[in-house]
Image (cartoon, rainbow, N blue to C red; front, side, top):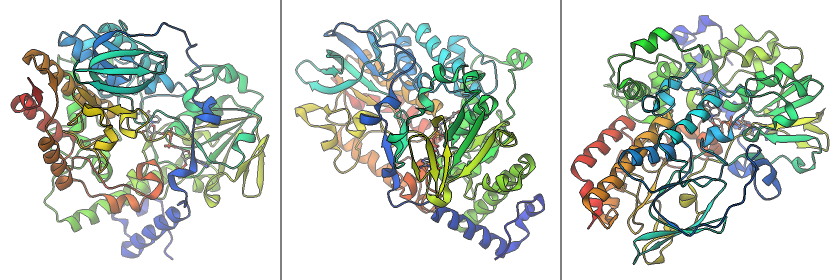
Length: 603
Ligand code: NDP
């Protein structure tokens, strides 16, 4: 078999020719095949029931409060960026009675829960952090630290007076439409039975921590927690590091995804010993973070953030853009992202030519990523294990200038588990891989989240609309929505998220556009004196047809990818997003608001 080279000589044009390309393909397939597990997504445990400890809130003590039986105009479920921007836009439109609700103890969503050391945004903060101009804030760094982003969420809430009427540590348990009153009856796990005229559900996609189904995981008697519930009492320190209580500990981190890549360098700095248990290496490219430059800030003119967000979105979607304002690892790999996420990308090439070109560009990019491992990691066998063998967007790309370097430390050891489909088992005091046992004091699970949709869509939150019809019964043959946001038979109920619409890597931007759209619809209803908002069954059917006809067909790409949550562990579902991509989708929404909004307003 042709040797797979990663030296820079192999980069330009992959001069090994067809044999080299075939060898790479075969290598990718072999690496994928040894990771595919028959139990797929079922290999994971939900952090609930006997594993509920892993999801408990370590940040805010629970406070008791009286049951609520009042009525609000708008209930927003979810205090992350989707919910916050929905609330803010409604406030701007003059709504007074807004109740924000979250299971967490404060606003922030992802950034409330994830406070692990090393946490940073990996999308440029100037395009990621919402409403910078409205709040009057400039991030301190190009890729802001997590705590700064969390505090920005709090600042948005304060700026738009969203703490007023807010309830935290509260989970909605049922939504029932009361037709005579034209209101939703909202029940919660706090015994509330409140009412809301409009309900906006924005409860996140990657929120519920998951644990690997490792045999014996429940027998481990050392200390253990999930990265999204970091235990600083045990480790000491804070998000910047200084985990001084680990100085005499042997620590295991399980997982090397985007979280692992940020956490591992910080634990490596302070733990006596760190064992990193890897199943699939991430792609780790240059990060190049730096403080925000005052001269750049001086140069900004009103409207700069929306323009920058739109430019970033256009770049990563492969749209025509005059200039690349952000110029980072995401915008330089736009062509590769199209395969997986955004759709769009105009080209005159035939499908076959384009696929061929995409694959070559992908091989070149991945060769650079693998060559970077060789440049940084001193021990050749460790370097070999850290090289990813799959197409670029099969897993979430990572960017770090300290991750690979951590493996050059004498207190850090990489344990590869790929040959065994992951960790073999856990005992009272150890992790076992194959026949080798590693004793540890502490196990930190950087093993990710259930890929969710809101409870309303997954069924964990029962929703009964007109004539008491359950939402999931109405959707028994798949989701039926207009633009992914609202449904016939479920008046005044809106969903934010990835459902029959368009997505992108800057998910915060996607949520902002969704929030602005939904707020405009609700405001339009109030202005028109509408009794309620509801799309017709015909409008839903037409949208479903648009989605089906335009769907981005990336099934083959996904199914050949190494397993992970991007492809449902090797069993991808058919694409149900808007194929022309997010830029075209946002244009379509804007046009719809101008021309057709009145069609969903029922007098
Ligand atoms: P991931 O799901 O991406 O990673 C989970 C890790 O756990 C993988 O490395 C996985 O290996 C490993 N794993 C799972 N089961 C086992 C097992 N039995 N034995 C050994 N290893 C195992 O979760 P993350 O929390 O890293 O990231 C989730 C998402 O959150 C990201 O994709 C990103 O969207 C977001 N994120 C964003 C950040 C930002 O800065 N904006 C930062 C961090 C996360 P394998 O790959 O083989 O399945």
